[in-house]
Figure (cartoon, one colour):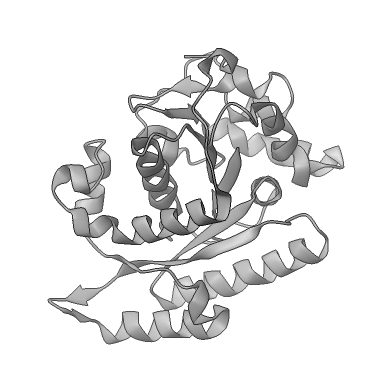
Length: 269
């Protein structure tokens, strides 16, 4: 199982959209995919149409070690796609992770028994520097960094890269950077706005052009597709999937051969 985390240190950067659509498109290609909602806001859980039931394990119980990861996995309405959900209670795990002495590695350790079950694991991380954020990075083989094409997005990228540099030096993160994915790139007709262009160029100067992925244009059609539990191409907007196609091709080149899901190892349905 190859684990990818969608990371940014500010809200509104598009990380949940990127996590969901990347996982959906991988699953449509026949790969077995586990989605992990590590954000207490639980937007990913909501977008998957999952309602957390009382006494049903979630990400909180998995990180605390109260259940095995397989016991907190649930089927979604999409073929080949499974979910570890979260709810607002996940915020309470921060102190536990901080005091455990191995919080940065907790998610990696809990997901390890699933290594032969799924081809990919896609993690939606919390939008701030926290113990939850550190444990998602520590579990990741690769990171994609969605960043809004604004000054706020540039500032978030700067902070995120600073954190990644620290985590690389301390060997918490030993994976690779899949790339920066500019989000809400504003266009008027066939022309990108000056603000979006300046901010994307500034990001490229900060990280290097080779690490920049094609931008995701600002479009209500993304929201429409997610609300209808469809991909943009299923809604008739194939061109909107181009940034994800580039991302997935880069990912597949990085990973190699996949395998099919073994649902006998999944405890919940």
